Length: 317
Image (cartoon, rainbow, N blue to C red; front, side, top):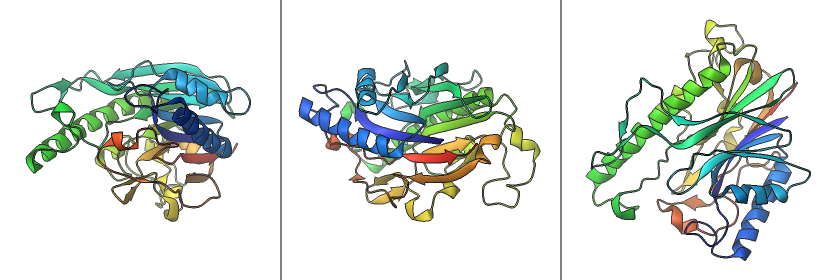
């Protein structure tokens, strides 16, 4: 079984302010996305930047066989949300943007606006796994690409850049904390016996503090001597599969010429020990070929395909 995550980059039907300007551009985008998904052949794919739920249905219609679709009911201000494409029936078990009750709202701009919930919902589903249910959550945390008042993507000065970078970091950390709380619910303190996966665009790299929040108790990381040894943290720990991705393809996006792995797959104890392979892009095709993106996401409006590569893991029975 192959599980994956992919940011589809502005999947909207044509005619709106963010999607392709015409039907031809829309069809080209769908065809490019469908070709990758068909080659990837996932059992379950978590997706981000679904602008129109109907567009994800359009994409599913281009794939072989009958696919099952689920989308979050909690989009952000641009209408983008997370979702799933699944070869088997799925049941939604959570769709939330709530912060833990103990976590206070965080500052979001110079005017003192605060954010007391995630900008986009986190969606969790359950499907039939190898030996019992497989529970999977998909997320899209606050972006590192900064926006400023009046719709600007460039700051007035470096002080403004620093402040808005801090606001984005506050929000991403709070959202990661909320995601970890959902992971705790899915794991239910029994990671040795439960198959749980967290997928998504975390908008930061493996060693970032926000990404590390999701791991739970420290220790036993992949590649350390403790990985194959039982540990009391195994019941609640998550493992990022990034170290299992070949170094020559360990990136999922190119930001201003810099390769970065910001899309992640994290697995419970029972699931991670069944991994047989992990990668980015398409299996067997080497490093992903991606365009370099800049600070203004509008520059790629109408482009086919995506500016992200899929990140995937293959799990045996």
